[in-house]
Image 1 (cartoon, rainbow, N blue to C red):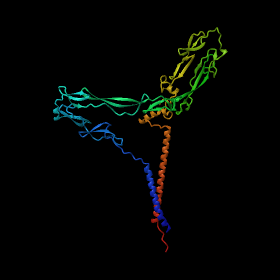
Image 2 (cartoon, rainbow, N blue to C red; image 1 turned 30 degrees about the horizontal axis):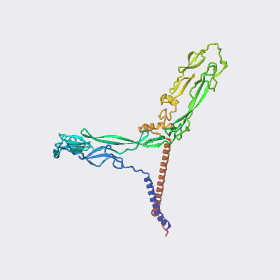
Image 3 (cartoon, helix red, strand yellow; image 1 turned 45 degrees about the horizontal axis):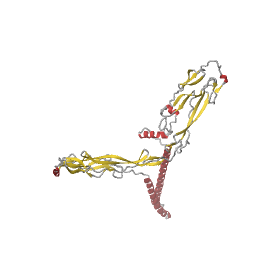
Image 4 (cartoon, one colour; image 1 turned 180 degrees about the vertical axis):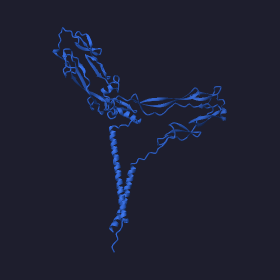
Length: 470
């Protein structure tokens, strides 16, 4: 007797737990579903467009409710001046206003009341308004009041010449040449003069508070971490042309760049890798009684190289001539060319100075074409605001992000998110997976409870019972 009684008590409890779990599971699923916003469509073409409603009313296109779509305003009656002889009407006609082709127009209709004004012959200005005059030039009744000058409301503050200004539209009303005119002009007013150390931004004078000086400070703001602020150069001296008498001293260099940190005005950012060593160039031209020693900056005197003072020496010394190096004899007369100082690098300024060739690197756009092979090989191109030299968003994000965005919009390639966005993408994927696993666990619990419920019902009502012994 205890088992059926226990099952009768347990069965409703299991059913109650099943219902509660199912409701919780349904609510969890519903809470993750994003219901689409109701869509709307424009009822008219553009803001300010006029539509006719019937023959006497007009409606204006605009956004008059909370959604983003355009709709028509409530109908407004077409109305205007109804004086005898108005506009193109004859003296015995009055205008009848109606709506046609998206604007209010009028038709001239005969009106018997206008016959009483047969003395009205022409219109002329008087006291800045428009009046009727008869054929004897006597002023009659007022035809139209031209109105008074007025100005609209001031607009929002804006920046101009690093100061804050505001402006409004004003209208000058006057009567001239037998017509009323309304001429508009812009009225501009200075609101605030931004002082030193301030800049105008979005109609406000703001203090430039990030920095005021330093190699990584520009216009009061820190330069980005892609900006170069220093160059470290190491020079190696040697004898690439040998150590015989008159052999010159050579040098070659390698360099690396220091970047700004992005949060300081000082040059304290990361260092780039060392670039490859340059080709050997002459750093000191040795005379016939001098030799080159490895590691020394200058030619070294060597007594073994001395020539008899009475002997004529054709190649006695080297010196500059026409931006190249020439041999000069013992009498100082120019002989043949020893070395041409110009090279094939379009990003160097070449010449001869103090008896030595120089090739000064210049990455300025005026001397070196941005994106050229020489520019890419010799100049630091990451941070020049151009996506060139085989750069991409992985190795030079700031230079290439705009180009990648344009390519993505045009459908040319998939955009590459910056590292922080990649991390967010992975976190979102992990969160979604956890959510999916959580939903699957709830479903298993519901199925398990459902199985227990049906098994209990079977055991209670349909299980074959043993016959009791007589």
